[in-house]
Length: 104
Image 1 (tube, rainbow, N blue to C red):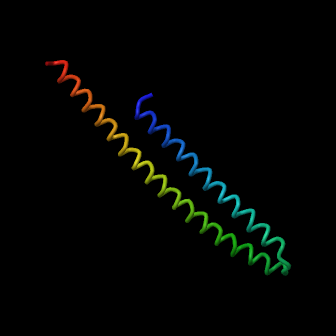
Image 2: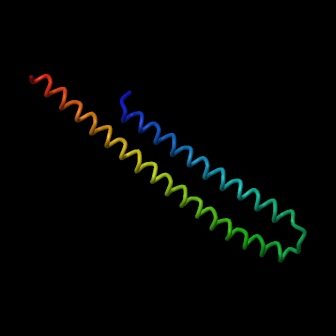
Image 3: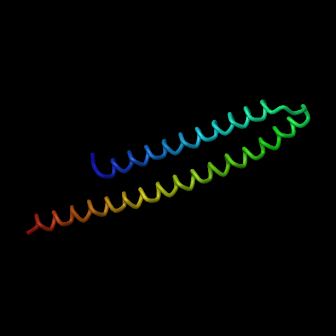
């Protein structure tokens, strides 16, 4: 396994972890909101208004959370790409050095 494969494996693992965290946060938020709204002692009209308002707020929070997760994933991918580029450069330099030594 070369260095590039190792970086790709780490990148894939980090993406999956970020995806799982985002999904878990969304599900947790939805369950908490539903329980809070349904267990509150209010009239039907007030409850429906609360559900509509809470749904809007929840969607905004989920979108914001997904944007944050997307930015972090992009940052990780960018770092990993730089690392892979550095590893490729290192391999290239090593090959050229070996070629120069063999030529002597």
